[in-house]
Image (cartoon, rainbow, N blue to C red; front, side):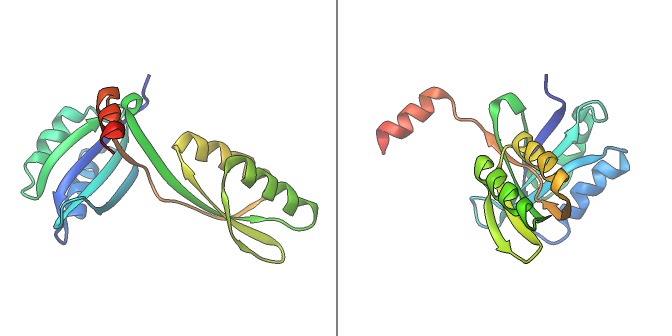
Length: 171
């Protein structure tokens, strides 16, 4: 059972659009769990991915309000069971002596990348499904996280099997 809504909002890429979209959620008391925005496939457009807790946000009303914004072109609610979701985590972790080898081994198991090595710490990155990042972050806690940043979730609908087969055969 999904615990969150994922909204993919295609908007015109103009100053202030993100602020107007986010303020709609704030005015209604909905807490945004994750927010990511970047240019979309068409020039002049951006895609905003908004993740909101299911219990706090009945989205029918907010969707109607979003459509009232001139810059909103399309809104899709993505079912987490039928969406491809990804996020990026960067973390600097204490790693001296024997701890360094353990952090490197953990990074290898999770297919994370080591980006920087210092005398007493390592900076690692991991891209993947948010659940995988949650697990990795939880395991890093025991070594001591100095700094941590996550990008926020991005998502697109999964392709249906027939579309995937046509895409593979066509290539």
